[in-house]
Length: 382
Ligand code: NIG
Ligand code: FE
Image (cartoon, rainbow, N blue to C red; front, side, top):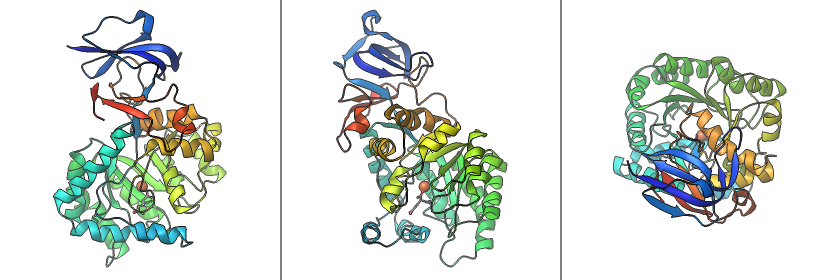
């Protein structure tokens, strides 16, 4: 077993309970995992040594929400929004048409391109949803393509009702033949519970059908207005409910009392001009918060967790370390994973080496490419 020593670490974020952040530290990586953490002065010998010369090292980002299987873009829609037109869920259908018309190789190349962008910016685990196919074959092939890139695949046949379909018949398809075709390629099921997408009864039917087929539950809700989606997710014990932009006190109480992780996606509010979600209110209430990119061509065409960190700190009331925690440990909680999102002994050797002396710089220097190197399973990937 060959080992690698990372030493000269000016600031090391491990999220160890006693010492979450340490200075002048070192790490040993072997067999794709962290095998030793301690002071640089006490580091053991290893087969290979990498001295990072005072740089900060943080856990690789866990991006728990993205939609990368699509074709085309919606730059014109974004341009119109910036001139005052509101965002509407119906824009999803534009991408559905482009995605259905694309070949598998083009869809796969798009995922490859975006995953590579993510890696260069420190993301080492990514969840990828379907949701731009919305036929049995197009959803199944979207998930088969996503599964080439990640184990965290999510079946989102219930993204919107496609053109020409009748809502009740479409929900029957999503919970019937489409689920049968997609479940073998998916770990999770998701539904967009919002005006213009699916109501609470349809969302419940979709989630429980997915659960009965062995999938974990995730929900998109309370993105564009107040609604019942967050409380439904908590009631059913979904792993995550993402967006959480419009929350009542009851919604916040339900999140705080549950194991359901509130996923906040500030790239969406950047691009739709809705108000940013109030992370402070959720944290103060005791809810678990994740930060994710929601990378998609409509509401949030960014692959950058560092941008999300900067927005969360500037606009959502989080401290730099709370934001980093939400994009690492929070993402891992959202995906029910304990092997990623931290750098304690036993963790996967997934980490980002920063071109900066502390993790604060990720928010303090927005727009600057501060991820010098990303290691996935101990190997350089970007
Ligand atoms: O997470 N909320 C629903 N789905 C995506 C938007 C997708 C799109 O506009 O194409 C989201 O924001
Ligand atoms: Fe989304």
